[in-house]
Length: 311
Image (cartoon, rainbow, N blue to C red):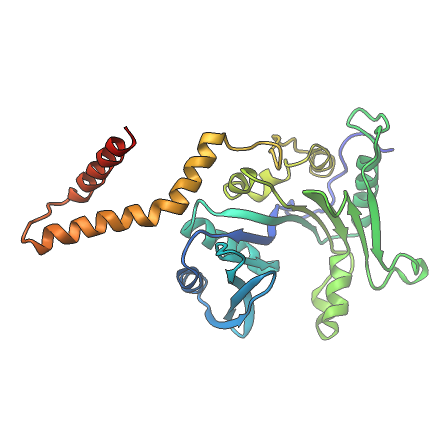
């Protein structure tokens, strides 16, 4: 076991956390979601097949590349679901956060890239150590699950196809991946291999929040999201030398009254808006004049009517 944080892994600028996957559920009309995202991202869109129980979908393209997807319809009228990955994840997340601040995150991946030198051994040692030991160096009563995939056998060839280490259960809300991104890209794009340093390694945290935490993560930075697990905070401190605040990912729930209020608005909000709209139309149709701010008066009147009806 190695004590303390790792040595600085790069000689250049210190790595920064970034979004590598961002998936969100958005409470809005599907057409408005697609067109708003396309406009923000400077993309065009076309219809696509639905998936995961959704009956329809749309693909957003820019410069001939797919930059985001949206699926909607079916699933008992579930709200539209949209996502982007890779270098498109960060601008997509910025768009969703600006256009729909109260969206729900279903999955988010936040990563660090280490491009210089040969950082694999340092990061691998840190990850395995954190999986086995607590912060004080004692062995965990229940060690964190580790799994591997990829080319772990050809040491004499420098593991040409790249290695991946998984930290944590794939069924858990929080899991990390350490993988040789440079070798992955060199294999994927052999004609552009010179663009990708073979020693480039990515350390990535995947989070699938539950309940209220889906709203909470929609407001957090990539760095803060590394705080969603105690062992992830320990790994982050070990690698980056920075302590992070804890972020609940599944335990915390909205209060019962808060949840009931949310679903009341979701189910009956459209009816209440129609009632105010109809009253506004009736007044103007009968020759009345509505001064600026009068719509607030109509809402207040509707509130009094509801209060009277409920006793």
